Image (tube, rainbow, N blue to C red):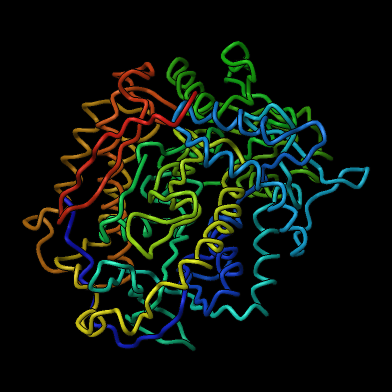
Length: 557
């Protein structure tokens, strides 16, 4: 059961724009910048402009930039990682438009690291057969891209509201998206709950990693966009495919929240995974050994932990030397040393942790969702690029390429979109989201949700555990248990969003009775193309989820 929320209070203010973009990572920033020539653009972000996942991206951005590389090879690696569920047309768009899109970032001022010959320095990561990962500041690629985009934003004419949590979608009488309700915090801007009336709404809210106890995602990644889309009646797809990054710094039993990521670019430069006996366990498991796709490496780590009884495995990069660590991976080195581990002189303890949602709000090749006027881009979206498992460093590229595609679509779509004041029903403006009925969950339940998901729907999954997760999540939302009405507030809305997304993930994971990509069912350990080469589409009707299977004829292994 899903609480019928959000019960947003009456908006105390309204503002009007042509396009409202929710989120300030690469997807949101590029969308806002590219849409600005087509009308008035308002960019809304949950915290500060640079507080999302983009700034934390270490490894880099993948594109066929080298003379010995090609979009066709990039496409082949992406399709292989996606294990038969990629939309090949979407991948084709990604890899063919990617190189020019990256060059566009350079024109905006992004300073990628350079080789001794002056060209862009390229490295390899898991699943790539070529060196095609452009990086900046060694291991601070996301931070540099964010810096350049924010600099471009300053004089762009894009309006900004920071510290604003998106609540729900506003619609007109025809069911078209016509704006959003927000809860705004902070000084020097409209406060409390308000409404942004818009001719188009773009979700670029990022990921949902905070649904698990341990994640590489920042605190703001609470699945707000997916939850909003479900409540708005949009289709979401492939939610069972949550990618767990194989090498996250192990901080000991009971560690929660955002965990330091050890980029697989470290493995790309030659670091090895070993157990406590010093044995390399990836050799022989896959032709790429430590650079196998992430799901294969994560599973291998979990299996060796089970076999040996160890609480983590080790990443040994001592042979790389101090100079490589200090120049190529300064951010990772500092994070490890902060936790009293020196990668120059000792192996780094690592475990898998929730990292990236390959599924999300279903879109077409131009970011359009199943709700007219609502678009989605970046990690919140499911474009079909990633299939069952995202290829390393394709995430920044996806946000970049499909943001441009949304802007192209909106250049035409806005010509026929009605103006917001003429379309939003007066009742909506006065009372908030007409869909929002019911109560919010207690913020104290956040840890309970995370523990349920980590225990039953993490890297290892099975029917019994997923059934238990279904019961326990439903129990958290039982009105008889929740008791008194929860006071509306940001923490309550976030926890309610986490619960909605968690319930949807569990429903999809329980339904898919096979192992594929980042979805690993212990009770169904094999891949089944005959019965499961397709997509699970989830919708919310009232307070009940429905998950249907759609065979995929247009994908290939």
